[in-house]
Length: 334
Picture 1 (tube, rainbow, N blue to C red):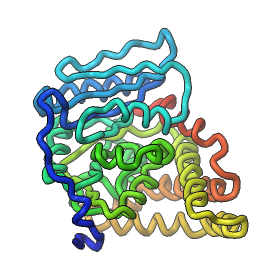
Picture 2 (picture 1 turned 30 degrees about the vertical axis):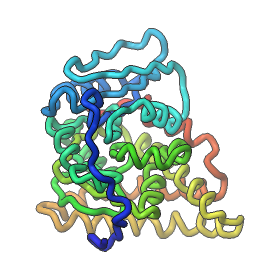
Picture 3 (picture 1 turned 90 degrees about the horizontal axis):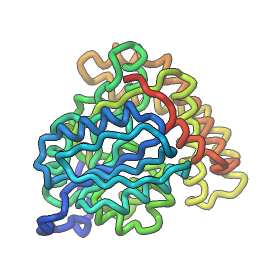
């Protein structure tokens, strides 16, 4: 079957099965460390979801040290709290939490990404016919409105900014995204190896002939970093991991790695800027928002391309540990 230029194999369409009455439909997975205040805002937003109590469970992996400020868990929904004091790689913690999920849908949320009240209900509806292996969200500005927060949203989630049309997509957002549990089980151990960069998981999904889409009514509000340094550093480490994984999976030799490393910082930033502009300018007020965001967008894309080049030449190094620091232990603007 061909939809939106993407082949969706009929064999990947999983029949909708009757679920046991005591199991949730959607499991929300969230990692928490030192950013307790923002995490509490997300937990409070989950408490306010419009879906029935039995539809959703919340799996929280708390990596905070002993003595960290306790979090107030939602009372309306089933909560599974996992305590893992100390630091571990983002992918290991994320996969560990996902393995505890019992829902048909495993929905990841960052500790600074606040779901709208209808988020869970709309997510369940988006998976309705059982054919999708992954469904992506669309994003609003979760920080107080300013030029900086709007530019950060365009940089991180410009392609998926609300409002936008939904439908079949060649890739989805990273970190804040959902997968059908049957697909994660199909991945097996490969999920833990690749989940630090969702792009890698999604490319494997497409190669398997499965379907994924963006759901325009599944909306979350994303909070931004407070500085350009933090935004660039997080993107550098994240894309370094992606580059190392891509080079390893493709089996590139030294010459190809070096060639890609030379080309990436030159060609990738303008290509990404062009793609972002193509997505944004067709929306009401999109051209103005696009141009306004460029002073933030371009240096971040350059930093990401440098990270990609580093991954090609030097491998992952300690990028996973540094990325976890920026992701879980760096303050966001509320």
